[in-house]
Image (cartoon, rainbow, N blue to C red; front, top):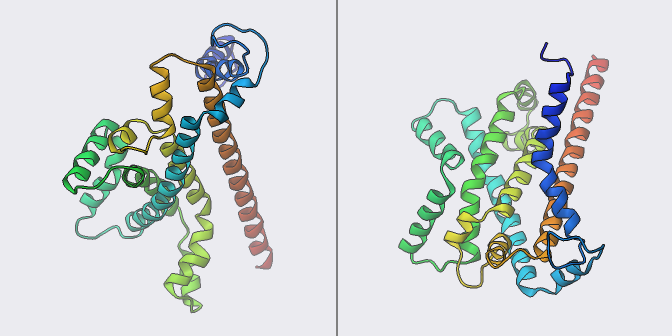
Length: 273
């Protein structure tokens, strides 16, 4: 009964998608608006994109944000993979419950609490706040998401493949880099992209841990919005939506290729038997 396509289901689905995506579509359309008023359409124009690239504050904020997002997501991928590997492979060790809780804490902890605690830590250590402190803070909460993704993939991992490699004389390190890592590569890509998106979008934690000369793009947009929305904000938001969309498409293509390759390898293995 619930699987049938009824008028009520179609209407509810249409309203749901409209509620989620219609504001984004309107934002993209009005980024090409000739008028400076974001609610009045006065014709098609790309002048706000030209004005955007001439705005040094926004461009500096975008470059800072991209650098922080790339570095923090890469570090989060390394540490999150190690944490996920430890949780998935070592089910019994002293302090596992505490370690698991510490890894998962950033997932449920409010960003205000995370940002405030990181701020107090940096103040206690007498560190100068800037790009480095924002990167450390983003790495701290992003690695939790990577650990969850990697752990869920390793739980369903067929360990007989690793055992076969070890029986044939491969070292544990070589087995991990040659066998395990390529198989869980889609999970690693998904974790990196998720970390990159979270860092790119973060405002609260960056506001607590930033310093002079380390203003991220979300912080710059927030400061501009308080003075009134301009078409430049629509333009930069449209670019961000485009970057995220391209990233999601690339991740989908890579995962589909990996799945097809895995199916082909399984068929080849079955044929050789």
